[in-house]
Image (cartoon, rainbow, N blue to C red; front, side):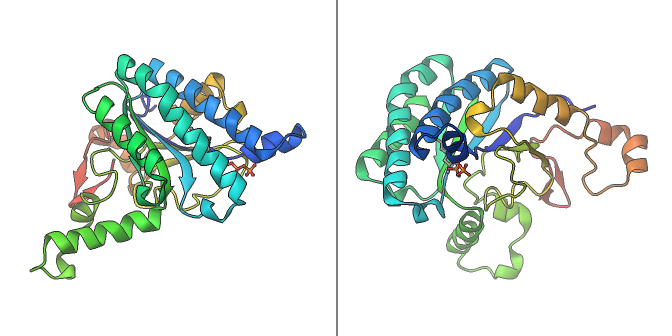
Length: 258
Ligand code: FPP
């Protein structure tokens, strides 16, 4: 049986359908989704989770109708403006990953401010992925590695070196990825970082994913056998493996496998 994961990543899907079912505009669904972010961050903090990473806006979400994009940007700004003081007091550290250069200057400066204000907090480490794409993250990491090592050949780049240049380089890989909204795909989220992650899909729409739903996902996770490429027999007979799911940089053959 696994202990609680240290790092959970969530694809918060289903806001639009939540609203449609209630004959309301999609933007109302997003507003309810933002309110639920507050709730789940509190719940995660309360159960002692170390890292929570939320997919708030993908690099593909710019293709949505402009009014919806603008509503999402507004909610993000509002979230930063209303939550950061409380996060600061509660010991939550906030970081944003993704290409923020595409955001309005005001939003960029609020993100910078929020990161500065909470930088020394040591409680829950909340990461919001905004204008984020997993392919972008890997490509950016490769380019950053090359820029940092102009005299070396790409043949020398290995998984551990690449991981050090990902936007999540200071986080352990998530042990559990939750996706709400009934779809079973990764949608260009943490592609590299979820290589060994347990994937949990629920039909609940994001605004309905409450504390009880989080507990159910944790319960499901606790029953998973994590093999990291080994056989069931190896897992059962190796006491070392029984203690493996502490993902803080378990390095094997140079690969971060947590
Ligand atoms: C997917 O639902 C959700 C999003 C694209 C955005 C997620 C945003 C929030 C939860 C609110 C803002 C975030 C923060 C951090 C304050 P969907 O619109 O694709 O739903 P559908 O699949 O039912 O159409």
